[in-house]
Image 1 (tube, rainbow, N blue to C red):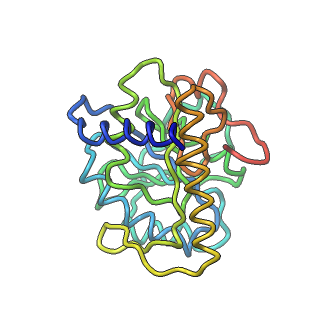
Image 2: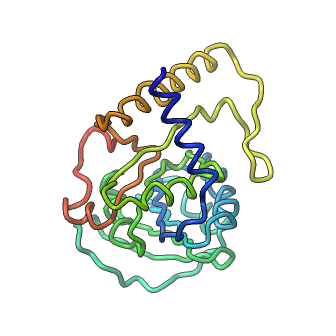
Image 3: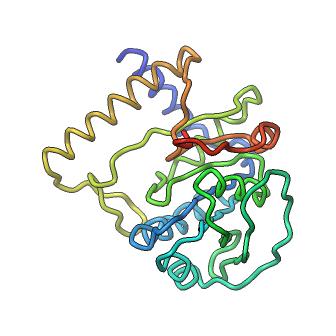
Length: 239
């Protein structure tokens, strides 16, 4: 708990000192049958783009059999874009590349189903920036998250990192802000378990350079390293 507190205290320093050069960041959001959850992620875009300009969003529709793609086309007002990009890492074929007409640097790759790892590999190939953030389709970023990522990755020796994750059921998203609301006891217990896991255990391990897992729900990597490793392997999970 002491180690966790010291890490969080250091994290507060990053929030206060955010005048560093803004590195380019690409956010990858794999989507498979996310029609009912993708709206919140889309609403989060405007908040992120306004707080961090050197940013691109890439949604990867992994052959969804529901209306995920139609939802993305409608909410982002997509048009077809140039489909040429580096294919250094193997992935299933991309059928269409779209770009948003209402948000700059927001794209959608529509590809043949290959799983989450395959979708991330397609996103890595398409991404223009060196810093890659991987998000689940139902993950919302705090407004300061990208500033902290940018500050931490000014250190060239840092090759990967993970963010603290909270339970979305404990909060609601209104006008670009996450608001707390009343929840059931079971959800409260789950929230406590996540707080223990991320703000005590993982924070403590990171202080000793012993963090062995970066969560697939919110991970940060250098693109050059991901390419050198050949991207993600198809495994049980993408953590």
